[in-house]
Image (tube, rainbow, N blue to C red; front, side):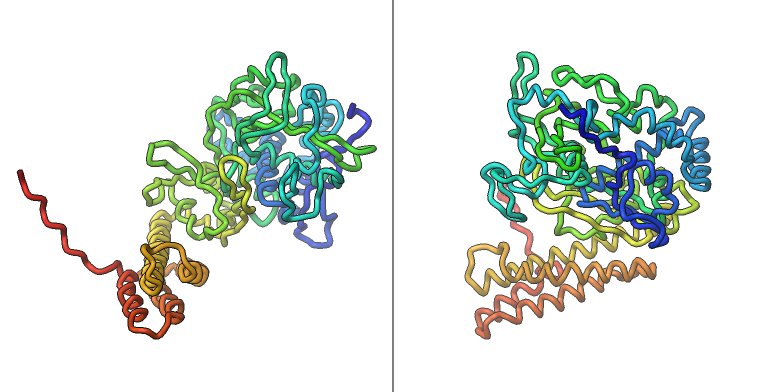
Length: 508
């Protein structure tokens, strides 16, 4: 059905790039040029953020393969030495071609073995889902129009370079719940589990060029990992059994490119110039145990279960910094830094100028998509080797959050007193205070970090909180009641009034 249409992800320009020399090359490249010219490419410009997060994982797997860094049979030190050799020499174009050329048909977006898709869906699904269903942000079915006037009655085709990004987002960030019906043997089902990265925030080290970025993003394999059993989906000849899937691989590459719950099939337009339709359904009936992705901050729930720190568009990146720098940061959730940073810390040649890019998607665990999340730190990864500084950064972050909470509670109490509300809760003053406090706290935080001045850093946050409390409550009416309410709430900025201990309960 799809053999007449072709779109080679190896050669077609679908990955947006920014060159170190702005006049050096085209604005987009294929997979081959992204690897071969990685030392000349400053950064990837592909978006949206969750698509770039997914693309990084694909590129990490390819990098490991074409460099031989997918194995560490002689130990970690040997692996680190070989990674440094690649950093100095760049990717070998002959090795890149030797890997990609035999698999060229598996990197075709269409054809008999479409890239990361299941061609059986054309026969197993009663009908396609529609191209609007494929595209995140487009309304589909009976949903309301929000971001564009797209209707199922008149679907607009999608360029292949955009379609592959939405394909990746479905595999990594797809929702759970209702999906297209798929019939396999005697099984007919129309429900699916969430993608492995849904609602999460990824942290990726980035250097001054794509070569540094990809090498800094590699996780060192164990001495027992073997390339011939640690396979990526495009290396497996047989299509997976959706009813009895094989056990997920435990090597570096299979962890980067596995755990997907969705099956997708793109329907191309004439000659492969567009994507006109798509099938979106379930890929397996059993969900494997969630592997600890190396690019997430993992936390411990009150029930003792590990879970990734969720993406939150209202939370600034500086509040995660100590969780990136310390093996175990402070906090009740016991956050653990992304495992990749342990390997990044040993890339000493470029550590001083490595930054951290955050990429994610604020979503609920099921079907609701809220907002893309993206951020970038200054060059801070050199602090990985300075645990005392990292702990001081953690103390500074805690102080900033403490006075943020105190300010929030103070203005809520003041508002409740002024309006005679029964309880202090979200209100106009708390929203205004948050909008003023957190950007100011971020500036104060980075000013202290850049100068390594951590003594009495809490004073900056308290001063800021007091100033914002004054500005926000200035809108209170000039009545005795309102003035008393504001003054009664003011001590909350300093921890609240000391309360008398409750009298001991009488003994029987």
